[in-house]
Length: 388
Image (tube, rainbow, N blue to C red; front, side, top):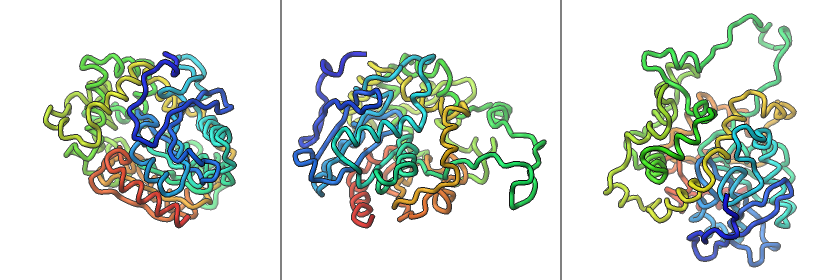
């Protein structure tokens, strides 16, 4: 990868700066900041992006938060953008991408920037479970948490002994449903995107797709936004193959297709691209240039840790704990993300977060809520920060 020192400057709003910070956990993190002139006198807010995004995704949210008196910090997380020190090899150090280590990345960055704590950690998409883990494990540092698009249902329980449950004995001989196999056996054979993202070829099929990387990202962002008329989310009845198959193709894909081929069928027209005010071509070019340079494998390693069943086993140390700091949830009304895991949203409200201050649904936004409707996201975050 090219050194961040010789890369072209990002097209940032006035008042947002870019720099490199050693996070004391093996990374030189590329960080965007606003409200930095008197940062030591300001409470901090940490913004964590998801896949396939960058710190740049927060560009229009940062200034309103800074103008309200906060030091606003948005890093390229491990595996992304201009942050260096991570292993891009599929066969490399997968363990460094587990949730505990991503939490250490955030903790180290906060300390390196001179803060003993932050007023809030905000996570979108895959940044949401990182933010949740921050608040769960270090509530003294991360004093409130805003989760966006991906609910936090709580950590899995420790395995129970056969007679160790209040609702009766566990049938240890009961078969475990293999959802991957069930999806593949449907009349229209399917696969879940997270398992596709965990395969060796996922990076190459997106990075070197026939339509080109820029066109792939345009279609991907379009398809998961409020601009695509097919996004009308609803709650699924159960975590079964038949129910999951009701999700859009970009969540539950045709078995023999990759993501680039899946989204190509919904490529927006030239007039639709011209009308996209929330992500004009010159801003999309930032993403396409960065992912062309780094590839997607860094972000895909996060999915591999999610699906391999062992990389995040150390989270069992906190099994049974809830997030005790004030929390809120924000999502676009046209976003399937909150509903892709059946039952996750009600479990977050009932079990995952003890001091939940509200779930907010933003009209005119799909999955990329902080890009599609940044003013409303900033308004909701400031209201939450005042209350929290």
